[in-house]
Length: 349
Ligand SMILES: C[S@@+](CC[C@H](N)C(=O)[O-])C[C@H]1O[C@@H](n2cnc3c(N)ncnc32)[C@H](O)[C@@H]1O
Image 1 (spheres, helix red, strand yellow):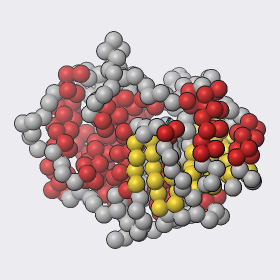
Image 2 (tube, rainbow, N blue to C red; image 1 turned 90 degrees about the horizontal axis):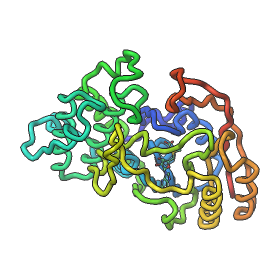
Image 3 (cartoon, rainbow, N blue to C red; image 1 turned 30 degrees about the horizontal axis):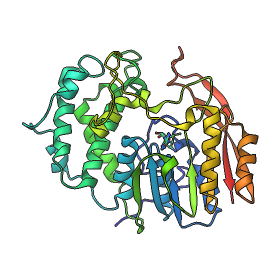
Image 4 (tube, protein in one colour; image 1 turned 30 degrees about the vertical axis):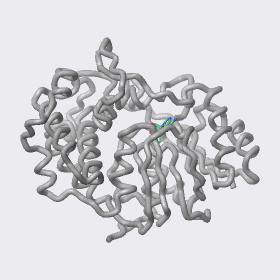
């Protein structure tokens, strides 16, 4: 067992592989940590875990952590680095991921030919998928799948799958490295993130609206709704989400150039539904400390959310954080148009 050394400036995420996941709170971790340290709790549930970086902060603080997300890729990250307290991939096991496998199918090679990666790399992805399927240990399997996902994201300019071909290639080193090397690097980073915090931590994949859990602290970081931008995760990450769930049970939209599949339903795509969903979640979690992330350029507004939280909790505080938010993924002409918005942390006691 080893516990990673945690530093204040990294917010306690020093060992977590850096992520470009949309809406990741990586940069806000020092603030979240500061707020969390002032609260008394033993168990923490992260209902919309995304990259897993906030759940990892709670794990690093010695808490019992429960994670949830409706994306299979997010649940895979959490299985590999939050729930998993001991298993890592040996070098030999990483080598095994690349071996010829006669059971390999050609799904990626056929479905995504010419779209995201060259043929040779598509063939490698199918081979690695087959070798991952054969793994017995679910934690090692989650590490290997997380490594494959991370490698595929790294090999895409902007880290997304909303466009095909090599647009936006800025010659970055990440795009030059082979997919194989990216997988090895990722496995190494994920291995280093594995540690035991002496708690039983659990990763779940599902709709947050159906999760009946009563943690001491509930962290809510749903997609931020704004009529000016879209917050669809599946549209951006369908390829890697498909890897994580083997495209099982999805409805591929064959007429689209990207071969994406239908987005998952969520109330956080419309203001009215989002407000109702917050009301339901706050009510259901009224015996927990509620920590909610939201931003000033989204709806419902700060005042609406604070009033709603006050219906269910005795005391409500709002911490405002000035945040430089990157819109790099939202189709603007410039690579990254930066905009000053405030990030809010609502605390309901
Ligand atoms: C803002 S991101 C969370 C980011 C995360 N806190 C981090 O730091 O990486 C929102 C997440 O909510 C998930 N999500 C959206 N609607 C959901 C629902 N109804 N149930 C569960 N997860 C949902 C998305 O898949 C996405 O991962």
